[in-house]
Length: 188
Image 1 (cartoon, helix red, strand yellow):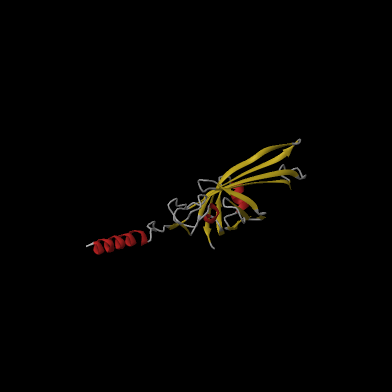
Image 2: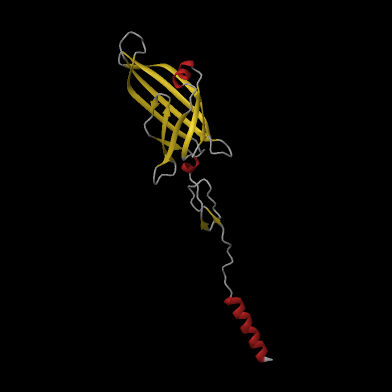
């Protein structure tokens, strides 16, 4: 009986202490708290998506403005723009618009916690005869773009706000402000 009790105790101890104690399940997901798909329960990191990833790509867009002048300027033509990543940054990108006759310079855009891409750009020193007196006037144009993803799509929608100012007696005076609807279809 002692041999049986000793054998039973040994088997029980080996079974209990010899088993692999790794009872924690492996949960695959994103372990980076800065990602939009962060999973605090994930134990193995895979597939993190950052704010910038929601916008990267090439798009074809259209603009519809309230002011007829701006609609005439931009036309009803489609325009292209590209959103590129900035290495090492998760909440900002480089965006470049080519609107009608204006080929834009690359500019930095930021993406907020609500996943809205926002870019603001001001161009000074544009000489245009706005007053139609035969002399070029100094014009400043400010553009503000706000874009967000269309649900269940790679497409974007938002607004383009344009403010045109003319310099009169050393001070810039607003002559035109418009908020245009901007829609963009992802092409690659």
